Image 1 (cartoon, helix red, strand yellow):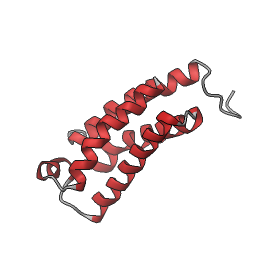
Image 2: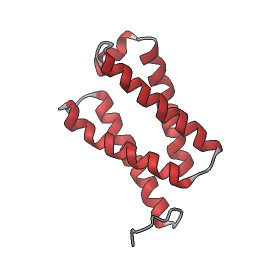
Image 3: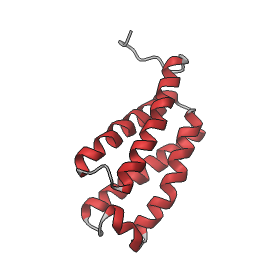
Length: 119
């Protein structure tokens, strides 16, 4: 499941980052016109993309766990911060969060990750 979640990040973020980088007009519907906030979003997406690629080669389950938990939190918060559940990015965020939640659950349930102080 860890590899599947990392690949999901990569396969989703490559086209998203490219469309944001080249300022593809159709992306404006979901992400709005280019603003500094959209540039910051691109930086976050690129960071998640690079971390996901790195974690395919540097197997560190604690780092992967942290990445997925962070993504779950921000993706679940997105309908509240965007103030809409109908935005295409929000919908994708929730679907990806659900996928990563299954991965995090399987990591904990399969004893692949041990969190100190959480017994």
